[in-house]
Amino acid sequence: MNTISKLECPCTRYELNKYETKSFYPKGTTIFIEGTPIFGLYCVCEGKIKLSRFEEDGKEIILQLINQGEMLGNRCFFSKSHFGMSATALEDSKVSFIEKSSIYDAIKSDVNISHYFLNSLGQELAEADKRTSTLIRKKVGERMAEFFLNTLKIFGKPEREHYKLDIHLSREEMASIIGTSSETITRFISLFKDNGLISEKKGNIYILDAHKLHIISKQPKLS
Image 1 (cartoon, rainbow, N blue to C red):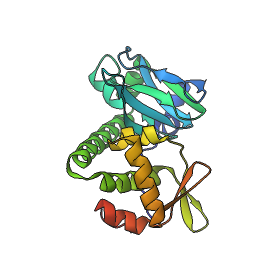
Image 2: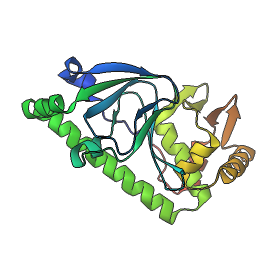
Image 3: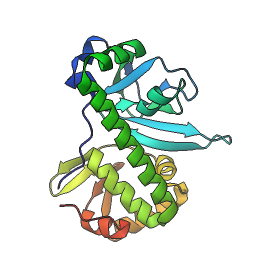
């Protein structure tokens, strides 16, 4: 199975690590809050992070799941003075921070870093457009199948003949990502299990039939 590779974090690929300060964030800890000033960029060294924003009624909307080796808040960094979302550790995580002035100095001195950020911003915009299109055009079952496939690409871990989704999300968090209720998520998970598409053991979800999930989601088949 081919996966869509994420862009490597420039902290490790370039010499930005000489500017970074690393911090440990236990599961559930907030890294930055929506509306706070942007003083620099964050890179996930270990762990998994969710980016989200909250509506006026307090409902959380999860915008993106971030894996090890990815950066946080790229779009906000280059277009705003304040973060447009919050970042929270989904598990115990180690995150590095690089001050804004160091980022700008590095961009001026290394054209490869400039290319990285341009590619990264383009990828994030494409993913945001795709998510909006999915929410508008697809039914819940199709969105659910697409969610499992997208999560498989980023967090899939081979185990025997199947793939384990190496990330723990509550029913409420899945509902926020897919755009439905937690009750509907529970119903579709049971339906997918009954049809042999996924299984669940000790809170871990396993993908049993990615081909059928692609048919349901109406995406091109993986090669």
